[in-house]
Amino acid sequence: MNIRKNWALVLSSLMILMLITAGCSNNNLTKITLAEVTHSTFYAPQYVALAEGFFEEEGLDVEIINTKGADKTMAALLSDEADIGLMGPEASVYVYNQGKEDFAVNFAQLTQRDGSFLISRQKDDNFTFDKLKGKSILGGRKGGVPEMTLEYVLKKNKLDLEKDVNVRTDIQFGVMAGAFTSGTGDYVTLFEPVASSLEKEGKGYIVASIGKESGYLPYTCYSSKKSYIKKNPDIIQKFTNAIYKSQQWLKTHSSEEIARSISSEFPETNIEDLTVVVERYKSQDTWSETTILKEDSLNHLMDIIDLAGELDKRAPYDKIVTTEFSQKAVDNLDK
Image 1 (cartoon, rainbow, N blue to C red):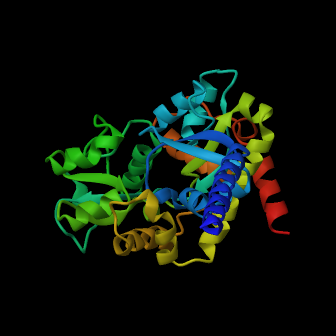
Image 2 (tube, rainbow, N blue to C red):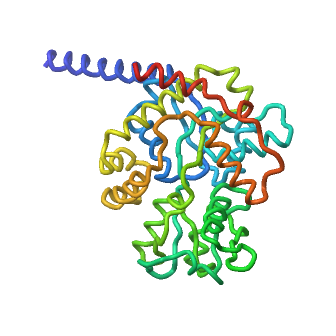
Image 3 (cartoon, helix red, strand yellow):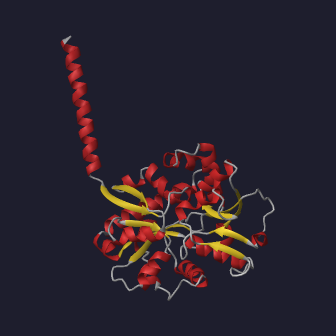
């Protein structure tokens, strides 16, 4: 009886020690807050970095908040509600052009295509863009990358935005799916997995990929305030390392493996459906292979912003972009 009691005490002590050790281990991680523009499989590399422990390997405990819009993400960054923001680089262009001293600097690129899909009310296996004449499209916030890229694609397909099609910018990005299913608009642009969920419910049908139509561009990047980067270069480097590790992991894993890795982020979507969604992004080369944001890519984005009439002046690449951390991640992790 005494032996049993002794073993029980030993086991209890071991359990307590394990809990204390785990607590100490977590305390050794540096906690940072990351604001994301929306929650989507479009940002799979970020969720892989969480699920596969790449952030932890770098000593980071990353808390993600969903702000539902690039303007709100930038506001969270500038107000110190977030340490790092994931959004389109256009937001940093606007802030720089406003003359703010402590502006946002892009230090890592995540995606290299638009992640939205054009949704119709009817199934259309032979869709062509001329079918949009006389129709209205829910396009998102005016001046946001999704809306401006949509305009670019429409113009590329010879559609006159004044005469041929009505791009609605009066409905907030986060509620466009609900507005569309309630009867507003003829078409809508949506990210995954929302686009596929509408299709599965028979409430909308994917007819075109805006990402394929628009080509390569630095659609979403990570940025921080200039002062934060200067004060916390180690954190920025560790964060960049984790994202780069994730980008390399995605290159060598199947769509199903990626879906299983990020499944906890999308509990409402089963693995089969999530695999389809991931494959849709993977097959069109959505994710950047490195975090390096190149000057010609940023110029292409500013061309699109300029074409949309939203650019007062171009922001200097060497002011709103740093490749220091991305280059170090490539150099150190590829050894």
